[in-house]
Image (cartoon, rainbow, N blue to C red):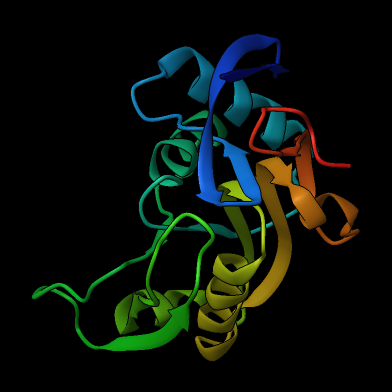
Length: 184
């Protein structure tokens, strides 16, 4: 089963995947899809509020944030990592529960990046916002670093996220029943 969508002028068929017995989602993955990544980055930048830096959570937001930085001429963006790396000068750590991940995760931010964020307007970008758990974790990292949340953006808002007025997004992604029909 697939759900067909047009996003930033690009049509894609999203496979419908089981999350639980009564919840199925349209799998939206921009990895490897250059056309979709370029077009959605361009469309989001047109809607973006003023900001100094952008941040995204590892990993599905990486192609998007890279392309948004490239198109905007920015030479620096931040990643909330899923694990600390040896080269990090120290880390902040927050936990996150995502709809697409089976277990609790943590997000980490390098203290050197945190120093650059302090007092700056930070735009949070992601591919899909659904439960808002990942978004809340990134917000917490930004706030602990002393950054100011300039805005929250995603390509798609899924489920209840569609009703939030604090998120800028391109399209609504419905959730589905087991038979592939849209849940209302």
